Length: 93
Image (cartoon, rainbow, N blue to C red; front, side, top):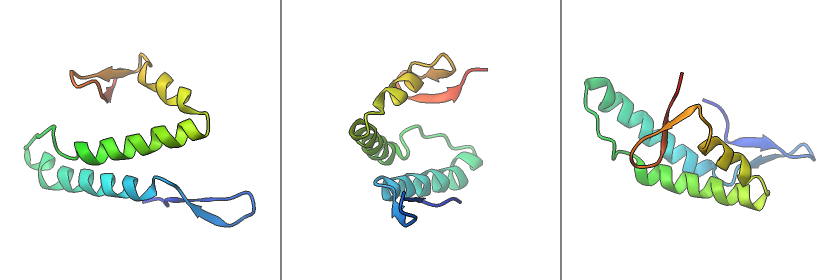
């Protein structure tokens, strides 16, 4: 479903610094969705550790690139509804 690699300015392929954490989170989410959610089981605690590690990596990467303000703006966007745990989980339409 898409590649974890991007093209560098020199034309070579480089791996995203968070690619493995992204893959781990997506694997967990897809497993949860197919094995539990689609069968009517709803456990909000599923894959949280994987998401937290992936998000922390993204935050660090964005900080390093001086782009973290983009993530903070997304968090404060009126288009995202926050649940009690403080994470964005749905789009407000």
